[in-house]
Image (tube, rainbow, N blue to C red; front, side, top):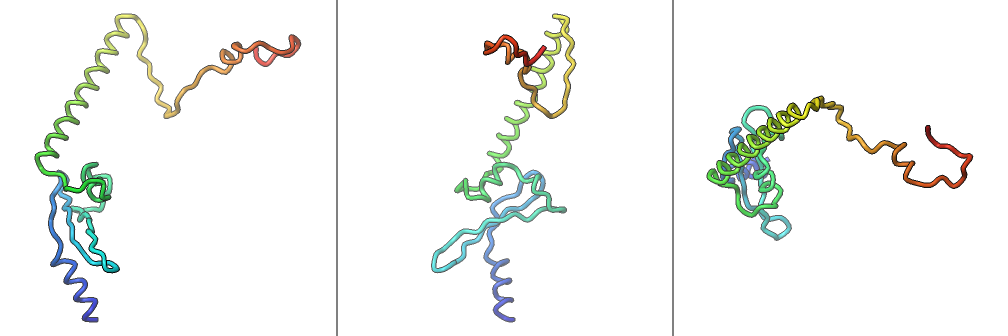
Length: 139
């Protein structure tokens, strides 16, 4: 029992806070020996409800070991500003496209079915000569 308590106490005492994200999630690390090899363990403590979608990409990369260093507050602010500029540019481009379509008289009806439309099968088949005159595939 005391060994379990020591392990739990060591878990909380040897952790190092690496940073906090915009959502208030806190990120920790600690080094432990596993099979004679020192390994770094990284984890997140969520603020409120555990929502993995609230973890920014930069922190996900750090948690998975794809980054050696944890993201800094300055880096996160720069990336957030860049993402906001991209959102604004996308909105501007959409507005310009709608204005262009309105000038040309093209309706901007967009169907959002979630499926990607492919080429028409009839027009595709017309590209190939029919081997036999008597066979008609489409009409």
